Length: 68
Image 1: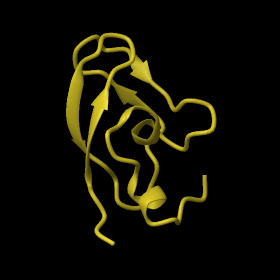
Image 2: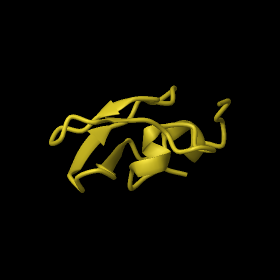
Image 3: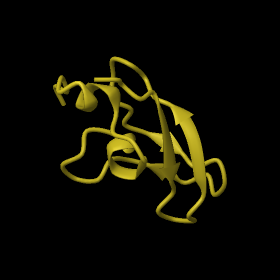
């Protein structure tokens, strides 16, 4: 299984989309929108901002190795 390392985050506040590189061995809990500068945090039940707002889940989830 190939792990994707790039995800497009869509801001739920302004709709701005930004491609970002994801950390390989960690979940990212905070992300600042490059357009409106609002801070995104994971939705309840998600481990990170990529799982909540990204086009691709984070690498630990993709690998089935998320300990969040």
